Each structure stands twice: as structure tokens, then as C-alpha cells.
Image 1 (tube, rainbow, N blue to C red):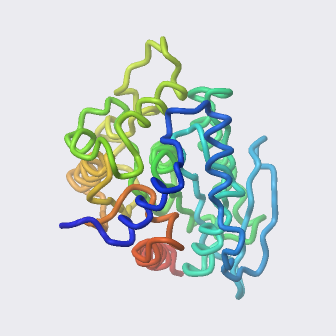
Image 2: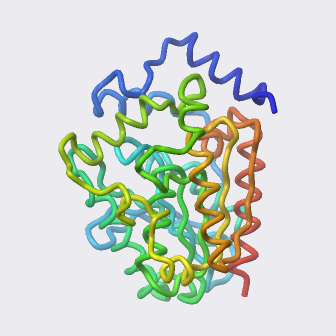
Length: 305
């Protein structure tokens, strides 16, 4: 299928503006460049309240929908290759998810590399998920209705948290990074020209792990695709969302297959004409709105009383 015209228009606009490709600047410069892309006029979705809270040393923002609790709750880990992104940059989409699902959302500002290399982000993700599961009632949530989710690198952290924290109810995995070995065909097929490139993926991985890390890419805390069979079989149901022009397409689909083969219920949502990051670029790419709606409808159904 041909690339979505809205995605093509956004890519062309980024070229016209001369925005640097990820991997050509330092991490700090890259963060600054992406923060400058935030739309100051974006209309924020209505939520009943949004409160900042430190959870196990990790800054978080907790959104509560209108209505009476206790609510289902989604713990959300933002994307950005474990190097860029923040709670504030994720605020608009976190509000959208809260508003559309009717669930609480915990927006997690986990530590970033290279200042805090692996496993710092993983440790933060697990610590927050474990604390929220144990203290959900204090937040106004139902401890029996707790989900984890994230996009890209955040999908990696969500999948790992689900493997490490027992008793979670659901997973929302949006074009997740689940195999650090970078060997799937879509990485070369979509290596250039579609926002996330193979070069930028190598740049992210290098900063996250360090140049001489000596780590095994099949370590499940790096690549949840390679978790043991019994761990996979014990996971909660999942929505796995992928995009056709995304280097991460094939590994996301491989993870969905691994879950299905282990007997885990999976809802696959595939956008064949989309690029990486379209979910959070919903103000520029209308299909992002559709993706948020699909994911939040699945979440609301999974966490319904």
C-alpha cells in the first residue's frame, strides 16, 4: 500500500524545515530540537485532574477521567529510543488516552540515556508498575484492572514490565521495540525516508547500551521477544499496533505471533500506510486519531468492570 498522503506531507515539511535527522546531533541537542516541534496551540483533551507524583523516585503525572471510580488504569511509557522524550512532551497524548478510554493514566518520566544507560529505564519502568499495582486503590484505581502500555522504546519497557510484574490485566504495545538485535527485514526495507531510520536506531541503541556494553541482545530485559516460554505464556492479553513503513514493523508482529502461539489473546491492529510515531503525531496525521481510538477502545473493553 502507498504511503499515507498525510504522512508524506509531514515528512516533506520536515525536509523543507531542514530538521536534522536523529543521530546527527548530540542527545541534548536532539532533545531540544524535538521539544521545539511541540505545538503550542494544541487543544488538550478534558480530564478531571492531572497531578504530578513521584513514584519510587520516578517523576510521573497521573490523569483521572470524569466520573466515579475506582477506575481502570494504564501505566504509559513514552517513546524516544530511551534517549529523548519526556512526561511533558507526552502530556497531550496521555490526556487523549485518559479522555477516550475513561481510564486513569500514569505518564512515566523514566530516566534517559546516555546519562542513565541500561538498565536504568527498565528499573524505573518495573518499579513504577510494581508500586502502582500494589497501591492502586490509593490512587483511586482498581488493583484488578491495571494495564501497561507504551510506544516504540516505551513499548519495549511496557512489554518488559508485563513480564516482570505479575497480575497485570492488559498490554497496549504501539509499534514496540522488542528485539535489540535489529535483524528483522523491515529494518532494512524501511531503513531511510520514513522518520525513524536504521541509522537513528543504531544511534539510540549505542547511547542506551554504550559502545562496549558486552550485553546479550537476547536478554529479555533488552529484547522481550526472547523471554522464556513460561513467561510469555503467563502474560496478560495485548493489543499490538504496527505500521507498514516502520523499521519496527516485523519485530512487533513477531512478538504478537509469539504471544498467540503461547495462548495469549492478542488484538493486532496494523496500519499498512503509516510511518513510525504516527500514533503520537495524531494532530498532523489523522490516522493517529484512529489508532488512539482503536487502542483505547480495546483498553476500555479489557478494563471494563
